[in-house]
Image (tube, rainbow, N blue to C red; front, top):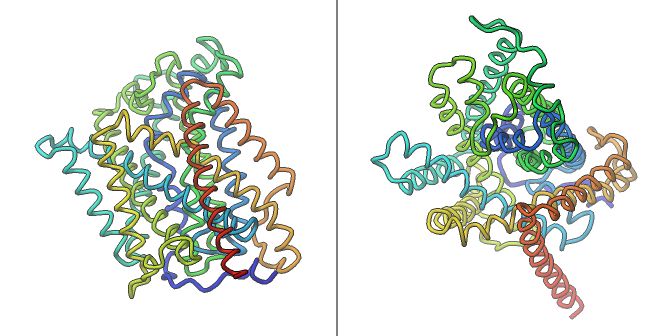
Length: 460
């Protein structure tokens, strides 16, 4: 029982502060999905997108609360992979760790390619692949440097994004209230006109949930980074609380401003609703301003996800689930080989995206499209199993507790199941569920075979 609640000492550096953890969570989750992708959700849900974000945000909040509870009690560089192993066995830790690592390194390709497209538009003399190479080299170097240097870089990256959203909210609220020169208060016209607040009914709200739920992925990196903070248990609890509520405020608040200022019928997938709002209120060069914000958001997310991927594969190596050679740690406490392994696969993903975006890379992207929900489900199941054990062995370590245990945990699991079922019903999202299920089944099969072989070896 003691092993369930006592984490071994980590060889990594313990220099990250609470502000680093909080901003790291914001850096991983605030990206192009919010600034650009939210237009697709508004197009199907109308003003009801606010409810879609509230529902998706509530699900993410419950998952983070569960993860925060376990990570505060048992901080580890592998976070939920370690928790799954302790709760369900080695197969679970192996499966969730490798699936999450694969998810992060594939997403790296999307982020690097997106940032390169923007940079190539500013300076077309440099080809897109040249920008990708530059970004990968720069952020590999950042992740190979001292952990404190990485933490400071990500803090300021995320701070720029937060400042942009706060500025947008202030401008938007002023426009709604008629405080800007030459503008009258908009009232409720856009919220209740064009078919009402729910122009496509609750079906539209549900479709909006499917469009936005994955935008909350990335918050998990907070708990991975907790093992490298100066006070893991206390810092992760505080960072989880602050990051979740800030994300909800930024997401829901900015969506409310968008649908209050503009008719939802003007929204089109692929067009940034933020640019449309800034144009509407007369902000000069709104498109160029938002390009800078999206560019910073993509690079920040790339940086945070490379960090998360390297720490996850390092944790797998610690537990014998990845090559032991990845355990080399620099004098500054950086797992350099784990960083290089993660960036190598990430760079391979970028090349696939540049060469075959509509074939090979599309299949790879679909294979991890729904993996986040599977990871969240294992987090919930792990919390159900570990909570009772921690209460019995070390109740004082539960400095952050899941609300309404176990009922809200079961409600979150039901919500994840519902999202997967709805994705299976939609033509656009069905391939993601099927390919992701296949990838998950393959990883779990390998995990079970490894566990069976290990048992036979021990018996022999």
